[in-house]
Amino acid sequence: MGRRLVPLTLDNLQDLPRRCRMCVFWELDPVSGEAAVKAGTPALEKEAWISAVLLEWGSCGRVVYVDEAPVGFVLYAPPAYVPRSTAFPTSPVSPDAVQLMTAFIVPGYQGQGLGRVMVQTVAKDLLRRGFKAIEAFGDARWKEPACVLPAEHLLAVGFKTVRPHPTYPRMRLELRTTLSWKEDVEMALDRLLGAVQKEPALRPL
Image (cartoon, rainbow, N blue to C red):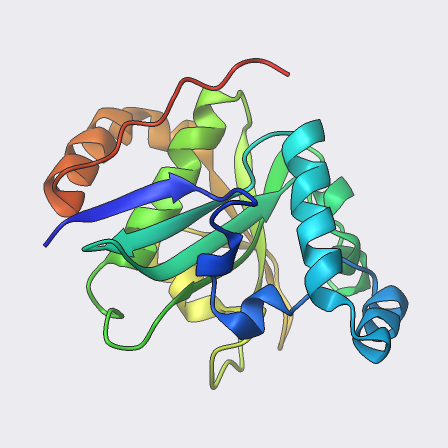
């Protein structure tokens, strides 16, 4: 079974689930997001957001393929690009961190370790780019797939709670603690993903 993770671009945006392509929960503040939904333009807003982040900051996501079929994705960006983050009771995201916004694995491919591999791939990317940590808002009362990731899943892949909250704890993964397993990540990716598509080296912006 061939598995690969490739950077999210405007060319493969259509490989995200339709409801995710139409969602601007993180990309716009609550008022603007509601206005976009009423105007019927969330897909255009999503595309514009990804385009802007790619141009100004660089890669902000990964798409997971299994046997060439898209089965999941992850989105991340510095908090300055994530207006919704300021609406959370445990905000703000730390200035030295990149926010893990959301991730999704389609049913049938869950429970195979792809979620952990996605987080490791993001960690590897951000280590290369000189960042210190990944932070995310977890949903401590998660019941079904949504824009906010389940806190339990974040804990399972190595995050620790830095600001507790009964519903939306803010969680953090220190990238310096992953330096020791950076080579292990490379080996794990090769082992778990099979034929891994090598990404081009990221040029400094």
